[in-house]
Length: 449
Image 1 (cartoon, one colour):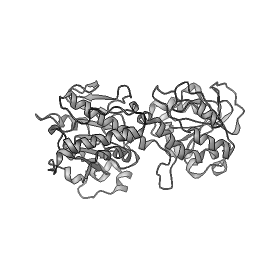
Image 2 (spheres, helix red, strand yellow):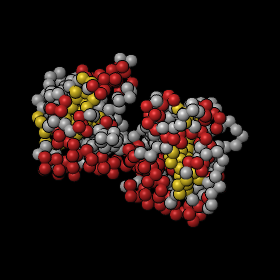
Image 3 (cartoon, rainbow, N blue to C red):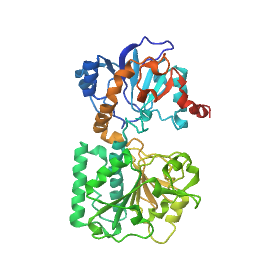
Image 4 (cartoon, rainbow, N blue to C red):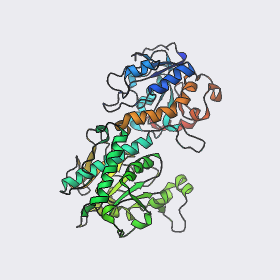
């Protein structure tokens, strides 16, 4: 995209879809060819697509056949849609950008990008803040992060057990991107479940209990994969304290889903847990999650977390878990949330598809890429939906497309409701012509840090 210091002549109803460039794995698209066809045919939009350069899950010809124009330059587009963050030198003055900006928590690594957008008089709509009347996200990749993250976690478990010299039914599970489709992935997981029911699990993994923190889109996606193993659900109370005795444990995979009331308790013994109070005053609560962790084989972390909330597992907790003479039951953490130094404090870094996990040694505090070494395996890939890019893009585009005509014709020079945007999109406008909108003024405190 060519950038100059002058305002481009922008045409209402002309939108651009940029080529993702964050890393070699990012091949997702916000709008797929079938939905471009709808936008061109039914809404008379002029859709401009940057050429894929072999870096998009859908080829240029599919977009061309759908009625889009293929052009390296997106000059003249009044709205540009993407998925991930955009390099600083690619922002055109006055254009509205729609993507996952990762700025609403004041993320320091994206403040230079936000400053550049402000200096260029850009508008910013963030998918993460497009919500319904109950503040539930409408446009997301969360389910696909959960789907891919669970496969990666089972893959990590299988490889870790092999390193320990333990043959196991998970060792044949590959990383998601190595399969042709999500359907193929699901068929493989079902086959693993069939083998477990027939041949059983190794004694080192019996009873097999996988814990899921959270119950939103990410968790549901992860459980969707786990349930293909034919697992049974336990109540959290079943794994609090001593290890439960389970009938036919060798032939069954068990799951436990933890809600907020299982993860924390009030600091004061004179009060009881209330969900609303926890979200409004998290400083009044402390983690009790370690009462469950010693009985888990695998932990899949799917919660939303900020520094306001207590950590689920601290580094001290990990040291205590690994300080005894007996090898801990917990072998693998699939940290799909991937909050660095966050709710799982041992998640000290994000990983990538080509180096998906590391081993954290609680005693030394060192990390080793791969499966080998003392400690616990942590999978923390930060862009998991990339591994099932086609299915993730199709579902995302299906929900986004109805909002696109309104965004394409919005007038960001007008105040509030006069812009022509529905409430859901209007509330997700973080920048309007280079200025933070009222709900996001708090981000100012992070811009100059």
